[in-house]
Image 1 (cartoon, one colour):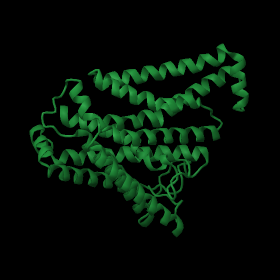
Image 2 (cartoon, helix red, strand yellow; image 1 turned 30 degrees about the vertical axis):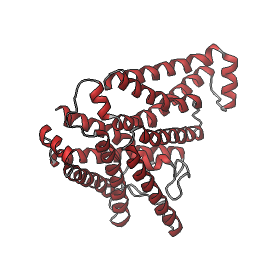
Image 3 (tube, rainbow, N blue to C red; image 1 turned 180 degrees about the horizontal axis):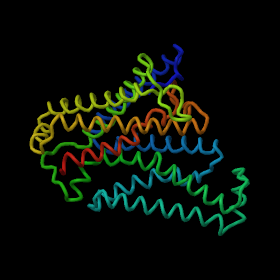
Image 4 (cartoon, rainbow, N blue to C red; image 1 turned 90 degrees about the vertical axis):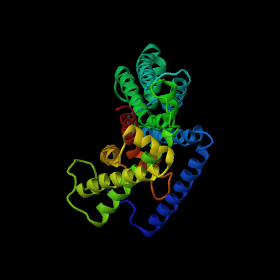
Amino acid sequence: MENNNYKSPANWASRIISAVIIVAILVGLFFLRSLSAYVFDLLIGIVAIFSAFEVENLLHKMDRPTWATIVGAFPIIVFVSIILSINLNLNFYYYITIVMGVLIFVFLLMLVLPLMFSKWGNRCRVKDNFASSLKFYSFSKAINTVFVCVWPTLLMSFAFLINHFSELVVSSGVYSNSFHVDFGLLGLVLLISTTVCADVFAMLAGRFIGGRKISLEKLGPGKSWTGLIAGIIGATIASVIVFFIFESIAWYDDMFVTVGVTWLDFLIGGIFFGIFSMAGDIFSSLFKRRAVVKDFSNIIPGHGGVMDRCNGMLMNAVMVFVFLILILFR
């Protein structure tokens, strides 16, 4: 949806240059991905780590401390869990069970340790300028850490799952992939294109059409219902275009015909991709307004932080993963 932070020509110039560089990197990684899917994992991992520390940094500005070591290690944990699930012929549910088990363990460990070692816990509490009791400090820091592990890291992990979708369905034995198509490529193109188009359409509609603002407290002045609807339309258009592009490739066309996938499936899916992308953007805006900042960081000239560019992708990754399952196993 519309963002009024980038109105000057200098900011627009840097915004465009950054966008061109990002697109070039993505195109290059897609070519390299044909050699190994793990190439794209590097990008997803970097995005997950940067996003996690951007969220953590804002939490600290809101006087909500986290355990930075856990925040940094969790993206590695989820990636290793996915690779283990693939190599041990486990399905998606085992991955979720492993990750949720890790989250529960982390929460309990971080809750208990400061209380067991109270001198160390109090030193941490003083260092974090936390005025309340050690018990409340332990609980608050543990819950904040789990929050960052879930948003954005756990949600971003679905991009890992999408990237390795073909391996997951084959290794788990629930799908043979006799069509020999790269579902990961389809899913990644769908994820990136629908999220980007949702963001671009929403921004353009909000800027040039305007309309009634979304009346959510502290959401920000630039969010309009016109932008929201335009974002959903943009994602839907992108989804249908992706269908026709992949339909023109013989292997994917054979799969679409055999499984019974049509452009209507992608149209309906596109609506949900847009909704989830916009929901991610709205949640991100609420979080930033609560932290009283315009952007998560300034690491990307003209765009802000990594999270400013992938906030819609987090929730959309879950939807794209579910969509791939639905069209294959219905």
